[in-house]
Length: 485
Image (tube, rainbow, N blue to C red; front, side):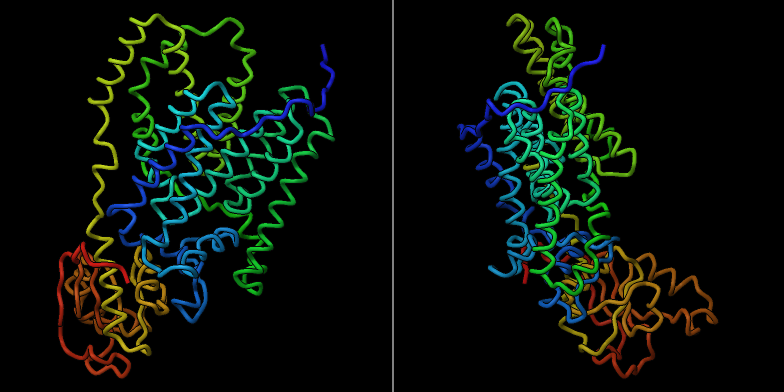
């Protein structure tokens, strides 16, 4: 039997309610992420790459050069360039706008839970997103597009859930999905696909309903992308705009899939109680079907090479929903027993919560100190190259100079390379290889943890001023308390 297509209604209008959880949880995010060593830690390679792209004129005369793959979207670079224009470019100030976006994302996580079932579902899902190891990466502790994308994704999902009940929700869903695409490129294309799939599931899929979502989505994507491209530099950004919108920009999740699922394992007893106490007619439950459609499309996007962030958030909401069902639908002795079992599993399986266990690796401090040594010691005309792309963007950002990639290292005066690579070049190579022009023998100048600054030209290199002697400095661990410049 074929069902008649029903266009989306316009009578009921879902409204955003400012509740106590939507105020307190964002404040908790700011307290946990906006202070402490995590937000002041040196930038990693991906963060430095984005920092270079968002403020090239301040750090490098040669302009932005994304070393980690496709160029960042203009919307992302425009957002990340706001903080350096208003505040000094310390690591903390660079990450603060992302922390604010993460706080807003947690509030929207509660709102999405309310649209699905009840506030308690949103509270549990938001708590999991905040306290599990993925929290810092998604909520702004790292400079990146993730917190902004999470805001747009959750706002679009909350509106998509109400597509069949409010025409205004179609416009909100389309605009939020367009913002997500402008920020994350291909990693957000599953959002309008989910909107169309949900219209079809709810028997509201016609041209008028589809246009109510797709037109605002396309308009928001183009408007935000073009405005950002013009703001940060029309010549380069407009030329790279099509490629950046088609590239993938969301970073990988900080833990392997097995360890991420292990973080949800303590809720297994409660989720099992929820599965066992499913209400009659649960197959027709709209919110459950929405969660399964979200998880399916996010998993397909992940299988096609996309980011795991949407699938992980969907799994978090599904487990939170089942656990909430289990607590609400069983007798209180059973609910208490399930809660005790969940607490025991959490104490056994999970490590300490990330707010109390964060320690910056020595390598990140060492890379920053090596770059500062290059900036303060080498004349501007000295050419610097890296033998490993794992430090190139950080060396360029903190060293404030152009850094040659590994394939051009033979033409450089100074080479920055890992300690193991330095030892292999100085001890394993024969004399004929050491003295060849293609692989000159490096001479130690300074060492910072695992990174070595080495001279690769002759003893009296004309452009290597200040480096004509043997090794002059060695450090194993830079001072962690030193402030960023």
